[in-house]
Length: 391
Length: 201
Image 1 (cartoon, each protein chain N blue to C red):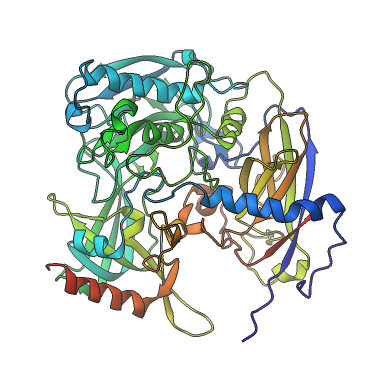
Image 2 (image 1 turned 90 degrees about the vertical axis):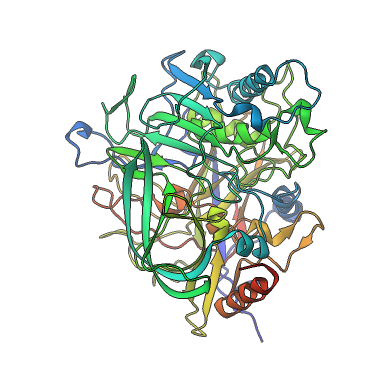
């Protein structure tokens, strides 16, 4: 049997330096404004990256509920107090994200950690960012942890002490850890090889609280699969490198979503079929909006000097301020890249080990919103092509 | 061999030099760490026998409706299904799966990793009965298989939501036959049936 030839593609890359606020990197949680809401007059109908409002230092409340906390810690022989050790892990996990250089995030972005000794504080309507070990009504066998992220649908939407100043603003993010699962703090992990590393889990889940979805890069903290029991991902944080557990891709995402004053580079391009007619049979995604590029492809930037993976994204769409319609034109953009280096861009279909089904985030399912000014039907991610790169 | 519609110009030398290393680096970046256990929203790795053992029911079902719900201060998505085949147990029909996240009471709540369904979708679900009388899905995405019909052969294919990563068995470093991104529905049914012979019903 002769295999069906795969369509070839060309990825055109343009390196643009000096842009401080690129629109995309591995930041997949997007939201389209409810354009029918009168509070959203003048708000763009393009997908907006969800994120915290970091312009209010100390305004991001965080609490943790350990009603049943001690039973999730496995610290045999530990005499320093498991609650103190747990609190240290939580702070280190926050610090991994706030320790990224070139970002506006800092330890001052968060309110002090507060302990809730009883009750249920993991409700999404209280406006408090909470880490909970006590709830079990939403877990099923095999589910270890997840994060609920509440985002604003309209400017002015209020939740607890917060009022949204932009669509997509995170108003509440609660991390839920399964109380039936054994987690271990870094100091206890070696003695508990069947326990899950609490720090790795928390860093990943706290990435969700900041607005990040999944990264297909395996070394990233936001990679969809956490370490096996008894092991941890990356390096442990250290005083001089609190962000050590993160990968460059995670750092790029922080710089894109929470840009500081440091300038970083952006690589933009489009993923196009060598034969444009190969897309002509695809149905339009909206009236007058044909599919003109490949959608859902994995685009990765390598450091040309070292070959190291620096950052990546899932490409395939754009949305301009003039039209305010999601165009499935093959566009990709990778931001947050350190300047002064040369990068090589590689394009890979999501044909495997990471498949479209493994990345069910809004990029693949919700770059459109029914009933809004940006209603459309995304095409299926194209997983059948081979890559060829053009300068 | 280049694809027949490949009209790209010859590659400059640096690209030729980097293409293979770049591809290798990319694959290594995807495969190097032990992706043994979990998914975004963190899930413990489960093979088919685990899914069968932990489930109350295993069904093939069609989604008939999806709605957001606010309950006990939380936002949920309730998806209603009718059973078309019961593979384990005697499930009620229709039944409702409740998963965290969704849109209700003016709140938009995102939970990465929780499967979402669309009306009309044909799925195989490994169901776990909660005490409150509703169902959830064992291992969330791991216990969710989407059924699609191959347009060429007409055969039904089942694709697990966590498909890709679990092809790799971290313990052996080899591809695990127990996890396939896409398998014929008949094969999945046979595997579930075989697994049922090994576990108490």
